[in-house]
Length: 101
Image 1 (cartoon, rainbow, N blue to C red):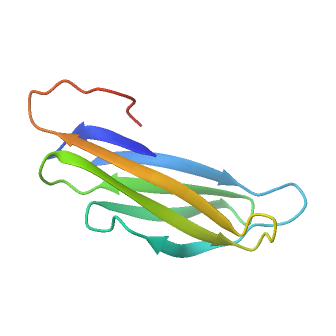
Image 2 (image 1 turned 180 degrees about the horizontal axis):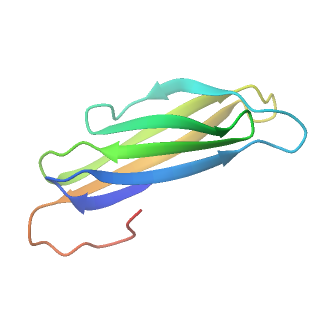
């Protein structure tokens, strides 16, 4: 997940997670190491089938911040989902580089 935008404003990105065809999916937080710079919320769009994870960079000073959200699942073949996060917050007047979500 890449969040890229002005340091003084809220910057949002969304990751979608779908269950396999054969059974419902359950997910829950295992660890999240960038809590002071980014928040997240999990929305279960379709029960046990489709989730949206909304990441929001907390307005603050410019800089690049990296972290990881790890989610536990009920799938033995994929017990963990790992989502790397990069938040690039730039000062006023700076051109944005890279991909914006």
